[in-house]
Amino acid sequence: MTFEVPVSRASVDQDVFKYKIGEDTFTVKKAKFLSVGQAEALSGADSVSAALNLFGLPGTKAGDAVRSLDQEQFSALIDAWQEDSKIALGESGASAT
Image (cartoon, rainbow, N blue to C red; front, side, top):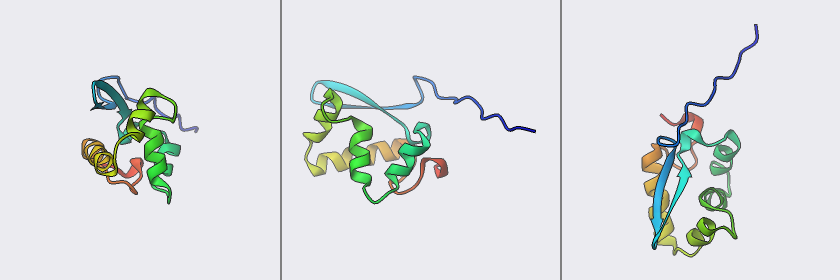
């Protein structure tokens, strides 16, 4: 017997966290919809860089907007995303409830 991995149940409405920086609104996937590799990176030693890249790669509008935040603002954004995703950084997305 071969196990077939089920199709993701993510939908556009339920799989993203929306946030606003200035006049622009951006989205990032909620933790349970991250790839296993993304979740692994967030639980690693360099989770701040992984989180920055999750919110937007350098050179993209979202990435540049996130990188323009001060540390207090970025912490507030991460806290809001974690609360919405029901996880804490360092915890894998697979173990989130």
